[in-house]
Length: 294
Ligand SMILES: [Zn+2]
Image (cartoon, rainbow, N blue to C red; front, side):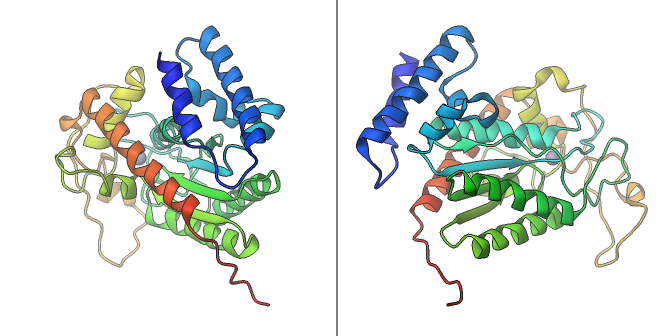
């Protein structure tokens, strides 16, 4: 019953202005793949059909008749207090991308595990990359998808650092000028959470390894959560860059992990996916204006 309902979602969400016959056969193939996967791997649902690393060459080609949108999850290898895994941001972004694909048909790219980590680069376990590398990587990945037929690109970042997001935004701007028929959205999970209904997150300003991320990991990767960490709100000197960031942020938490629960994580995932699916639809409906110089 569940799969039949999911078929309905796909059929309802077919792309616009494309050949009906091609779409039908594309859907057939995607559904067949999904059904086979669903039968042989119980936890794998319909969304598997659109995960790049799991689909075949024909399934990718046929999937293009259904969607030209790809969501690229960006994350980080970064400390998340004493209790959450270093891959928290990437796990969050990737799982959220999968949830969105279950609501609205999109390709989900394999995640980019590394990001630019400025405030935590001295904390044990943080492995950052430069903004230049991040930007080049984003551009190269988009170029690859563009040449394969994708036109709409969603950079979803589980890591919301300001400098990291600035480089992703800069990459997105370059995509717009390089590919005049492309559409780009650059959004962090904090942006997504700011659009969720109120009353779910109790801790004001909770942003790193606190109530939200601990809840998410309790829900998504319970076995990787090692107890909890103290509530913490670091204060860095305004406008002054400091070398010894550990001195200002010893615990590596920004928020309150004590308020976390698995059920809250489930609610956050569900609400985030709805917000993001709505953003994807708005992006796909955006009229592309070619403003490149004549
Ligand atoms: Zn995080």
